[in-house]
Image (cartoon, rainbow, N blue to C red):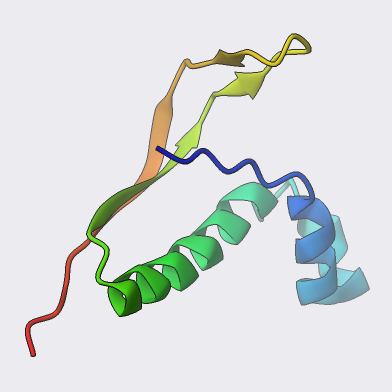
Length: 87
């Protein structure tokens, strides 16, 4: 199982939407959710190319503690099942 924590979602969104849209981050645009959606799309394509079937979840709640432990109160934001396409 892989866990990927995006640590610079706000910076990524700032680059994508520019200085005018920067004021919307956190108010109208959830930077973390938007970056995760883009990553899920890219991972789905890559997984299909490699023949990998998977379930990708975007969740809200897990936090890394200072002692390198993961606390897991989960709220699933999005889910996508990646299945191989029949040729």
